[in-house]
Length: 406
Image (cartoon, rainbow, N blue to C red; front, side, top):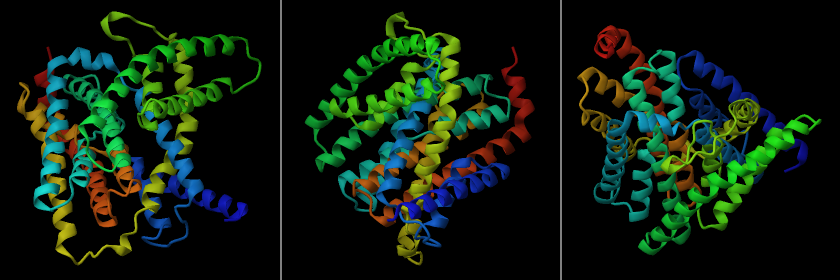
C-alpha cells in the first residue's frame, strides 16, 4: 500500500472509532462497543473500506500492550486484601466455572479440539475491570461494600486471566497442550513477576531523577513507553507472552502496588499521578486501533447465519459466560440483593475477552465462525450488564443501601 493511502486508512479508523465510541457512551454503552462496531462497519463485514493490513496489526499490538499497561496501572492489590475471602471466592468461582463449562461445551458438545475448547473457556473467564469500575462509579457504589468486593475480585480475576493467557499463548505456538510447557511458562511467569516489579521501581527512580532536571517536555511518556516495550521484550526473552510485559509494567508502577511480605518500594504519589495523566492520551490513541482491528478481522459475510449451529453455539456460551459469574457471587454470605449486584458486575468481558479471542484468531486456533461466536458473546456480556445494573439499582438501590448502612 502507498504511504498516502495508509495515512487515509488510519485517519478513517481513528475518526470512525471516535465517533462511534462517543455515540455508544451517549447511549449508555461502553466505548469499546463503538470501537468494535467501527471495525465491523469499515471491514469486510459491511463496507470493506479498510483491510486488516500488517501496519495496522502492529499498531494494534502496541495498543494491546498499552491497554494491559493501563489495566495494571489501575490494579489495586490493597482492595483485594481488604475484601479478603469474599473477593477470592467470587474471583475463583467466576474464573473456574466459565473455564470448565466453556471447555466442556466446546470439547464434548460441539466436538471441538482440545486446544480450541481451552481457548473458548479461557475467553469466557475474563472480567473487564474498566467497565465494572465505570458502572459502579456512575452509580456511586464504588466505595460501598458490594463495590469493594467486586473490585477486589476483578483484581484477582485480572491476574489469573493474564497467567492463563500466558499458558494459552504457549500452547498456541507449541501446537498443543503440554504439561512440560505449562510448567515452564508458570516458572517463567513467576520469575518475571518477581523481577519486573523490582526492576520497574528502580527504573522509575531513575526516570523521576531525570524528570526533575529535564528541560525538554515529553520525558515521561517517552521513557514509560520505552519501559513498556522493554518489558514486552523481556517477557518474550523469558518465554512468556509479550502482553505480560505491559501488564507487569503497569502493575509495578501503580501507586497502589506493594511487594509481598510487607516490603514496599513505593512510588512517590505525585510522580505516579503524573505518569497516569501523561500516559492516558497515548493509551487512548492506540487502544481504539486494537478494537477496530478486531472488528476488521471479523468477516460476518462468511458465516452461515441460517445455520442453527452458530446460534446454538453463541447462546450456549452466553449462558455459561453469565451463569458462571453469577454462581460465583451466590457462594458468598451476603444479602441476596448484594449477591445479584456482585454477579452482574463480574459479567462484562470487554477488552480483556477480546484480547483472548484475538489471540485465538491470530494463532489460527479459532476459525471464522468460532471467532464470530465468541465476539458475539463478548459483545453481549459487555453491552447488557451496565443497563441491567442501572435498572437493578434504580429498583432496589434504597434497600441495598439500607442493608450496607452501619
